[in-house]
Image (cartoon, rainbow, N blue to C red; front, side, top):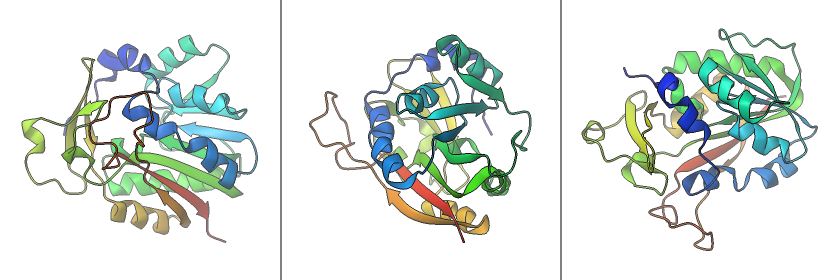
Length: 235
């Protein structure tokens, strides 16, 4: 299995903005937060270099970023010196039970190498989320690798073989030198984990481009690249 080379790509990755395909990952988040989130304390789980953290802060939220990559956190602190960023040493979150109104995971689940690890992660998220809290997840849509996009290319020999849940997919970031190896999970895989960790799915949203955006699209008007899940605790 290949892993992301954070040390090499952290600085270049930190300079990516919210444009092209990335724009669709964030476009509908404000309306979803307005509809499903009560309170302002948010944990940005897997914040990386802080792009999602800074975005959430523009919405008037109090945001704590946490990540397992020291290289990404260094870049995050450079770009947001007043921000709160924490290094996650292991799977145990350094927060008390019922600490957050919302937990945001943007492009995180495709970096989890097994469903067992994902389950352990969601049990911790369940612990630190308030009783009426909300989890918002932005992750890859099913079969996204079959379609070229404005931000990503999947045109690699490694992706020509049949892809199943748990396998890795190679992707390149257009206009950069960045190459990542993500794990592919299906909607069935995700829902299995949500159910096993006592969450209910209240909404699944697959954002599409409208053609009115100031970007040149590839497949984004017909094929969603991202799926957004809204989760609540079972009562």
